[in-house]
Amino acid sequence: MNTPSAPTRPRRAAHRRAAAVLVPLALAATALTATAAPAQATSQTGEQPRKQYPVGGVAEGVSNFLFSPNAVSGVNDWNCKPTAAHPNPVVLVHGTGVNLGANWVKMGPTLANEGHCVFAFNYGMGSPLNLGGRVGGLTSIAKSAETMRDFVDKVLAATGAKKVNVLGHSQGGMMPNYYLKRLGGAQKVDRLVALAPTNHGTTLSGLVNLGKALGLLGVVNSAFDHLNLSGLKDQEEGSDFQKALWADGDTVPGVRYTVIATKYDLVASPYSNGFLKGDKVRNIALQDQCPKNPVGHVGLFTDGPTTQNVVNALGADKPDFKPACQDYGLPF
Image 1 (spheres, rainbow, N blue to C red):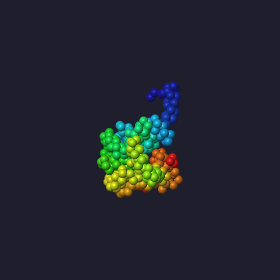
Image 2: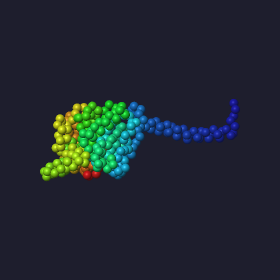
Image 3: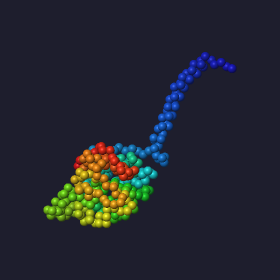
Image 4: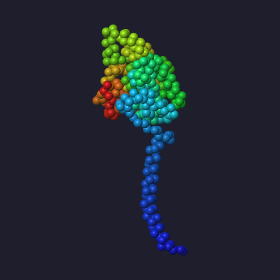
């Protein structure tokens, strides 16, 4: 048996001291890795985590209105493929007087971060008052619905999905009903979520009624027609468009509807006009959930409770959902 030389013993002692330090560190690292691994692969189906997008607010909305009317974070990734958790792509439909870039700075990336494939389009830009493609929703609603039909078909073809879900604001919550009822959209839409929609028309805080009483509404509507602004005329309470759209009822079979409105709406007024009647309809007045919420018609686009309701309606869809009463939108 050979006896270790003197220089060997110190080396072995050093190795033992190093092991005493490194082994616990290695075990700790292993434990941390084992704990962190499930968090990275949160999907039960082994799906990879999606990219997280920055969520915008009012400032980004103003900036996008001017400089990015055709794009917004998290929206229109044509390589996005729906997951088992969110099989239906979401199509966003902006309101009158704005564009997709401005309207969806918060909800577009929020839904993308939730795992949805999110898409949006501009429509109703044919008027000379569109400010270079920035002001939409101005022209005929029937024509705008045809634009929506073509866009939905493009989304379905790109994603391979059978149906889409729709989220719309103001006219964007009402116009899809024409697509559903008159253009065959009921076969391609699972859920319609509408924020302060101009369903059944608006009095615009009584201005439409005043125009009728003074005999001026006909003159105004003639001007709308001349400037290719019939999208405004179509949204008036009592218009020929509104009468024809709702003559056969509010809903179509197979579609689930959620309407989210604010009692302080001065644009789509009275706010209750936006509510629908039907078996698969949920009507929500935000102040019934959060009495102190001052949000107005425009402010819904960044309102916290509204966004939470949208995420629920396009996700778990719990009928008794209650949002946290915080991060209120603009009071106009």
